[in-house]
Picture (cartoon, rainbow over the protein chains, first blue to last red):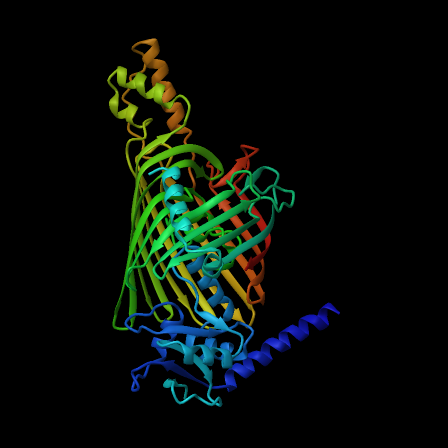
Length: 139
Length: 397
């Protein structure tokens, strides 16, 4: 039974990684700057708490969301546990707090539409509301 | 700055929040917990409090943190900690105000964690680092966990790199951990500066901290120093007083990729204090991420020496000077030293995004005759070599 559980967990991990490899995403922002485009490193830094000159509030998805795994893999370049470890270090040393997260991309999109100067990521196959600006498209 | 003064200040801020509903809306509760079990393969010594019987009482803990947003750029944070070890205090670990006037500047005031080294201010948050016990040669002692004071942090960006400069100032009144030995100390002035840089997967940190104006409660030292001063041996007397500085320097590099990581940190402690030796220490960690699993190896090493003034007290002139001179030799030749090499192999399984199971085995090779960070040595003939085995469960909430 223990062997079966371990195999199930390992195969589930591979399935999630495989989904992460295949899915693509776009990054959208609620901004007045209709021509704004961002580089991959800028989005990575923004979602890891290094805003720099970009004054956009990052909105993420919950750790259970598969699209978050895609984002972690393709944009941030870190595992979920490393990202959690990083934010634990930031939060419990009083330096920073992680981005606000929502369970689904629809909820994240709705929040971003309602709040100026926010940014989130969605699946490339999602319908992007006309009032949001696509600032990055994964190729 | 007293604890009472800070408590009054923070209490005033909480009272200023508009009403109960706003209080609840603006309050965020988070926390962390760890259950750590360990055992050492010898009955001749103890390490980190572990002996030859498996114990979960040395490093297990539970902490809850409340962050209250008072206004858009003013917040109050408090962290309560319950620790299983008798050597660690439980209670308020953090209590401070944060003021962010702009995105570039942050100011904090209150009871804060002392950020000596890379992981010093999150040393209780096991989820934040790969090890179960952070490398002992670097994190094993000479540190105090918190201080009363303030910090100012400035952040800026240049090209694709992010930088921050953090300066802090304060004082400490509490205990001082010297590889398992607790000494009551007061440090009237702590000042430090931290430079951090991050670009992509690479991050670096360089820091310095100076602790001045010590008072250490070591019975007999003041009286001994007075006697030596009375005979005019001021250099030798100064060794037993605590009016000089201890300075710690640190540099670290971290490289994190999706499937592997490499961390290195080096420290140097300079000290004129009898209770703090001069220490050089470092560790190197290489690790591999395989889906939800992590494997790593860490090599750490420390060397230490005590900077002792030459004994100018003559022997054979009169009985009292004779006994003082021998006492001086006796004390200074028995000061503990902390040379230690350690090699750790560890595995971590992140079975949920906020839960990790860890296992770690560490080979400890100290120097015969030295303390070598062992918290207790039961047999003088012990060769200072042992295996420490640990398992842990880390939880974030």
